[in-house]
Amino acid sequence: RLHVEVAGRYVSIIRHRGKLHCLDSTCYHTGGPLGNGDIEDVQGHTCIVCPWHMYQITLDEGAKLYESLVMGPNGKLVPGGWKKKDHAQRIHAVERRD
Image (cartoon, rainbow, N blue to C red; front, side):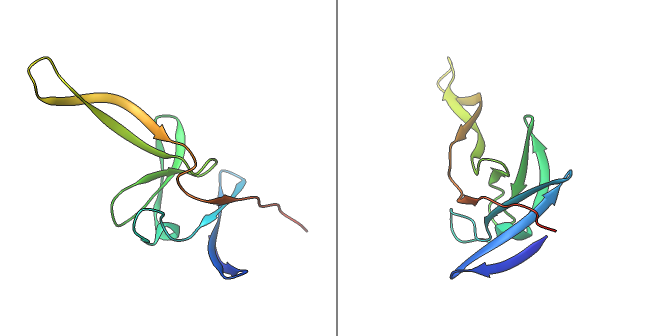
């Protein structure tokens, strides 16, 4: 990982499984240190997890993954399946130059 400032914006460049990703270092939710988060596979997506509130952000799209809740037949909330909020976190194009 590489954390840099580019044109006044703090970004993190992450190499994962041979691919480069670049995203804002601070989490869109409340400004947590997203760039320092763990990398995890969530429902077939490679995510970085914000250490403050455990938000799961996909490295390739910046989408937030979450497990929704729905009202069950007994009037209580039950898991409603995985969903995603597209483009929640700002991502940036990155390329390797030798």
